[in-house]
Amino acid sequence: ESQKKDNFTSLVEDKLNTMRSKKSIFLKHYANDLDSISMSQLKIVIKLAGSDVGILVSVLVTHHQKVGAAILSETSRYLFKNIDFEKSFSNSRYFGITTKLFEILSENCNEEFKTALEWISRFAKRSSIG
Image 1 (cartoon, one colour):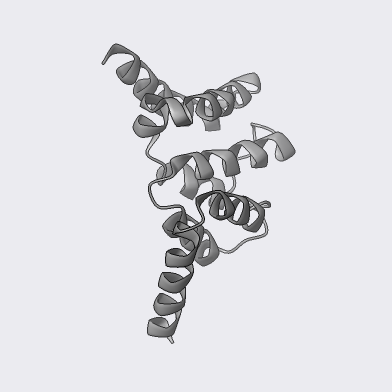
Image 2 (tube, rainbow, N blue to C red; image 1 turned 60 degrees about the vertical axis):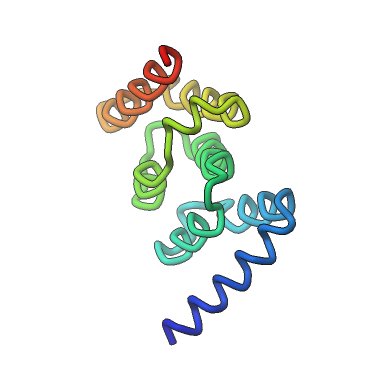
């Protein structure tokens, strides 16, 4: 069962990598509602996104535009922990969408988000210095 799932995921990953923009559209649609997908589905999204952190950041932007910045679900926490924010802030391709996420979160900052915002800020400052 697990081997079949891995084989299927690998097949989908290979196909989507050949169609980068389609991969982005598919994954953003698939993870459109972070509160309704399972953790295993989210792990598949992360794996299929690969090095394209912009897809994952976009998923968070969409999620927090819908539910507000003050709500940090289990799936959004997991996604935060698995995004390379250093890469997303230091790469001009991802900087805009990452900055947008940071702005959304800053609008309604509460105690639960302070840690996430501080973590993101550290990477933003580090990448702007270097």
